[in-house]
Length: 223
Image 1 (tube, rainbow, N blue to C red):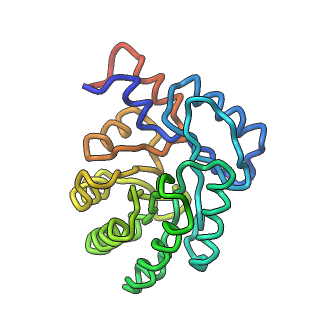
Image 2: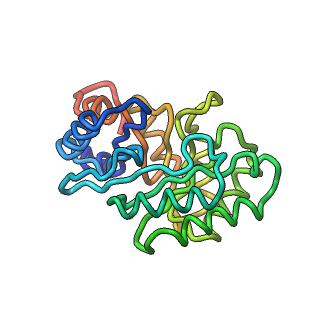
């Protein structure tokens, strides 16, 4: 049985709306500290963010992934210099769909090389648009090129966000060697717990407070 504190420590409390203000990001950081989440995840333009006891994550090549590797690498390096401890990069989705595996490998390697070794690199694969074979292949490449996590989704693609099936497949592919971040469309406790059961080791959420509030409710939820 997972505890409320353990669940909170799987959460990246997220605010990636492009119109989000510096004041809203500061409020997010304070809320993350109050809730006990592991990290916040914000847009790179909102860095730096100072929050005691909570890691800071940002995104790279977001949300389309259709950005040159050199630009992604430079964006990631600047984010790390501005205090990001974790970088969630979107792969070149056209390269994945076109089976241009060398392109995918090269861009992940470029971003990995651009940030300090201690920086956690998560690779967003937009699993809802991929076949199972594509999910497995891109996860294997992410591992090969030094990623720390594979991540389901940006939360911005019309095809949808995380699914239990995708999370389970990703977890089976990378085993215990990499983390699996489920993100996109996780808005209630039941869905969050289902993702954890499927193998997610991190959750990207904008509904962190709602989900943790549901956890505190005395009846109606199985843990």
